Length: 251
Image (cartoon, rainbow, N blue to C red; front, side, top):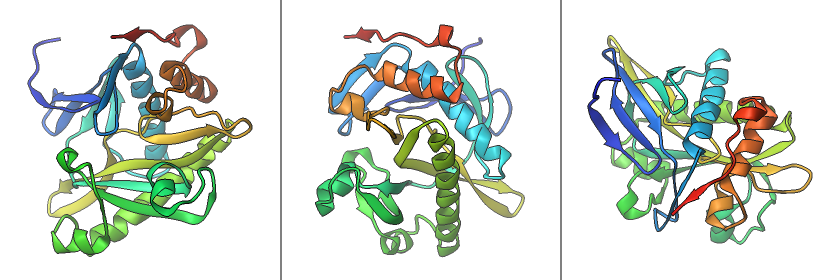
């Protein structure tokens, strides 16, 4: 492929200028980070798995009428996505207590919540992506009230879809985070699901055993991250068994 212009490099992905106006090539790296990049490693095959899993989830959302930035997968590590203006928020949907919610509120991990709880974090790595309220979002102009209504609706629709898909393969969707982007069609603005949806951005537990099949495996040193992600891909039928990469850690 001809040399492309790099737009941005994050902890898990690199964004390149796309082949057509209004498009971006999103490249999935093998890098794994946790605790705001205090813990790092490179895990062979992770980017391939996340690319295929994100394609699977984004395609499913598009098919049920939830708009996303995903256009098509280009190869094992890259996908073509629609360029959008990212709202500087992480939108978190929680179905069960885990992670920071358990620590903040003293609720045992795995406790089912009375209803899905939607939280917002301001996207700023230097600040540790702090939790913010709708009052903060409105006061600092990150999103309008109409935007927030639309974001909430999108987040809950993604939750319904993801919960059902995972339940069908014996996996409980504990929580997940998404990013939302703005696209403009003439004078009309539309909000779409952007970034990625993968085990990097979800907590996924086996329903019968409680085994973690997400990035907590890396955060908590619970075994092979690639094996965990491969199990999710296997259950969803995303990768043939022969293509599932066995774990190799690179120091």
